[in-house]
Image (spheres, helix red, strand yellow):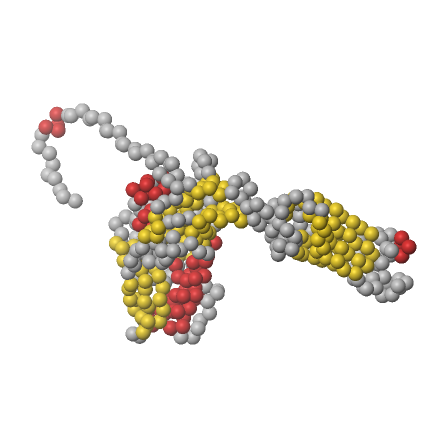
Length: 453
């Protein structure tokens, strides 16, 4: 056997942080591995990551060693065994086989690779945040992160709101959503991660303004379950008929609702990093509000409360199969069936902001279409978990459903979004006056009788 063992570093190990994994594979298909050693020399001190000798079939056996392959995956700096300090660092890997060469010492292989330790997290600088934010509301956080930050944004509980470069490149910003039930002491943190696992955290002090949400009782009948719930189960492969009306309703209203909202969170990642809208968002023209954002619902079946959920949108009704108009300019990122929401359209408005239109009877657009404010995209209906014909409308920010009333308010958008981001208000277009028409002699005679439309 004249071939030395093969040593392969299977992923980059050049700039190394506290969580950077070292992954190596050592193999010798000939006479097998005799001994391996993996060490790090950091600031002239040596630290052993692995040291192992392998048995053979016998001293002079032609079968050689019993071990042909060896793999190691470890994060050298994860447990502070090696001090996390800057300085010179080198990775040393050696291996020998059971060849009879070199006076029975075998063939040897050695790899020495320099790497750069990095344990300093990115720098963060918080600009003036809003003084307060309302439960269920939205806001803007402006900040600056050092160039080594590869992921940065705002963390609120388990929800992460990624940051983007300002339109004029003067720092970064993140659009954030506060949960409708957020406590006054909810932790809000600005975070930044570099490429090797270092993380910076900066606390954001925001006053949470509380809202009082309504509680409503929703009566559920067997007739409604057969009409609305069973079609949902038939169109949802993840759901299996539970055998009773009540079990089917609870499964759809609870478990499927969670799955559908997770799908919305996944779709929200498909958002363009630019503002696709200019004007304030619009409520469906002529619509009557039948249910509001964050209504707490008690579902009553045969005089017993069988489930509770919070309604994170507005139910808007006009007439059956009413033309549904877009609330603002954007791009359609979803137009399909979605469980409790039925036929659903999601429109991306940029930077993680999207609008949702549910319970539709038909579609007039498809995924990928660009749409303008006021454009008809569908007609209202009763698909999904709907008792009557209406539009369920939601505003979604990075997967979290927020109160649409803020985004319908032009003054709120100006003071809380545009002013915070130094974005000028859209120009007001004043229509040109019509040219004066010459008056004919016939105009002075008696005119036709007027009618009232």
